[in-house]
Image 1 (tube, rainbow, N blue to C red):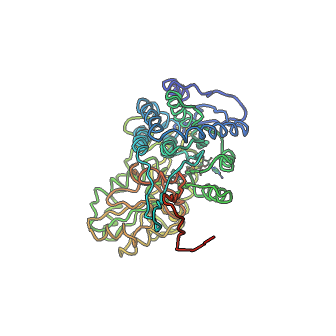
Image 2: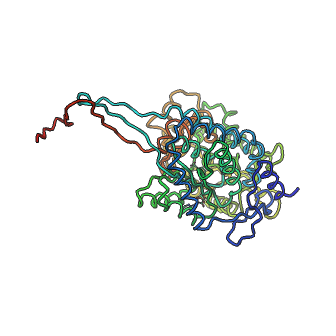
Image 3: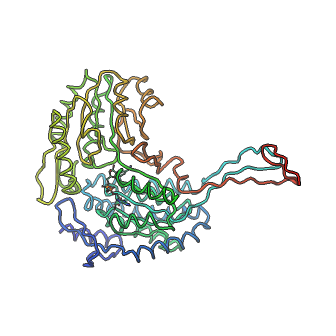
Length: 502
Ligand code: NAD
């Protein structure tokens, strides 16, 4: 069976029939990174179609905001159940479209299910504060209200989970959705949104609650600029976030930015090296290094540097690289030729700075596919490409002498997404997670930098954009806060004791 037929079978199993063979000129060609072959052609949304979709989403919002939140939660539960019943199909589609290994595709779909469960609970506990008023017979309250249409812009590497993090929370908070997926992964979007629209219809709501806009950057820009879109949740590169953030600010529109990362782990002398090797291999080589939280820098105490590098080189040398649909493969292909070229350019730049490069070479595969052996790059100090995010499996390793230097190296990059420390020294662990420690949104102890659970707030600082999604109180980003002062007395005392007698 060809991968194109495989894709059609997935859509049939999902009971969805999008127009995948459209020969419309204004369409996207979707190629699988597995062998570069064509999976499907997807019609792009014309400006008129995008405008109509946003109008539908806005009209649905006007009704949806009046539906009680726990009832809104019922829709999210139904969606989560549909996703659970199609977990294998959806995971396969993710693998076909992104080249992610099937295990990670299954993990991504599980994340969709998990955030739906979280949001269902949340739908019964959206809360505001009651605050003591300085005036007699007055009550001071905070109430939370939905925003309107939430525009979601997503990256290729999590073609389903990122939308679900946003959608599940946005929906229970009373918003509707317009989703502009990556131009590299529109099929995953059509599949997941197709299930959400079915859940809506099955529960007596309109499918306009969640619209997909297919297109490239220009479609994303139109979404950002549209007056019905009240919050833009954008996931992708820092370059994209700079544009989206500025465009939103100029319109006084909210933005929630989840951008790049250049994540480090510090390995202290007391670390359990078995944990380090396993944690680093998954975080650096998993998803072929194409996670925002991928481990890119390992900062290792000089006394254990040589033995750790030796063990890592041995493990990276035997990582099974290949077909992501095949059992046992741990590293699938890069998304495209550009990713491969960017990786090779970073490795050349490192070599020219005197680095020792292990692996990073192309592995066998179809001519139009890009399989690589994840690279380990030894650098005496942090410099050149190590200071930037290269979205590919490169693990830079650098020695440190003093603990304080290691923390400073962790923080000495533009991004601030994820970080980790491997240590059995309580003081080092506590310092790393204290205000004097990591400046990232995620600071882990004795686990790698990737693979966050949905219960915590997810996101990062500095050029990662500052947004928070998923668990904890991230829901507040999808609502507006009103402060209400209620006078239930018979007089009108003014705050701050001001007298204004008339
Ligand atoms: P990308 O920035 O190329 O594209 C992301 C999305 O933004 C796409 O849908 C694209 O069409 C759209 N886009 C690009 N320019 C735009 C603009 N000016 N206005 C509106 N939309 C625009 O990113 P990518 O290559 O798909 O993904 C990789 C990047 O995403 C990496 O930097 C990675 O770290 C980051 N990422 C971050 C997170 C996170 O949660 N922090 C998660 C996944 C990926």
